[in-house]
Image 1: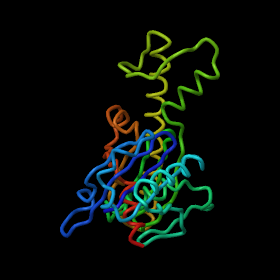
Image 2: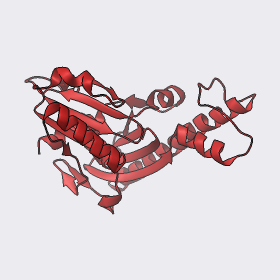
Image 3: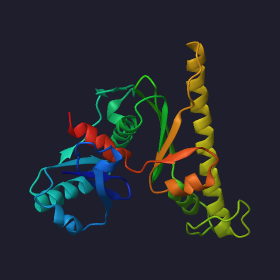
Length: 256
C-alpha cells in the first residue's frame, strides 16, 4: 500500500492506493479523505503502508509539519514530488520549471495516466483555478491561472467599502441584495471566465489539427478541486469530475 498526500493551499487530502492484478487506476484508490490536523484516522494503515508520496504547494512550514507528523505515525520518510522536464509519456513544455506548481504537473501526469490518448484540458478549481492543456502529443503545454471563488469574494470584500457578504449558494444571476450580488458576481464571473478560456484553448487545438490536415476529437475536460461540483452544476461545458488526478500522478511518479 501507498499513502498519497495532496497538500493544497487550503486543504490536505490523502488517499490509500493498492495496486492489485486486474485493478484499474481508479479502483486502486481504496480510501481517501481530508485531514485537518489529526492523522489518527489513518492509524489502521500503520504497518501496512510501505511508502508515502507528497505533492505540496502549501507553505514550507505546512510541508515540514506534514512530513514530521507522517514520519512519526508511519515511521516512513515521505517522498516529495517535484516538477521535472519530463516523465514517462509526458514532456514538460513550461518555460520556467521552478515557477510551475507541482500540483499542476502531477495532475497533468495523472490525467494522462487516466486518459491515454487525445488532447485534455485539466481544470483544478481550488483556491486558485488552473486550466492547463495536455496535448495529444503528450506535452504539458501550460495554460491559465484564475482566482477561485473565495479569492474573488475576498478581493471584493477587502477592497470595497460598505460591502459585506459570505459565500453561499447562488439562486439567480440577478441579485436583489448586496449579499446575493457579490456571490452571483463571483460565481457567474468565474463560470464565464472558465468557459471563455476553454473555448480559446479548443480553438488553438483545432487550429493545430487543421494545419496538420485533419480534425481530431474535441479535448476532454477533466475537473477536480473543492469548487468542482459548483462549477459543473453551473457550466454549460461537458466537464468530467476526476477528483483523484493528483493521486494518480503520484502513483505514476512512485513507480519511477
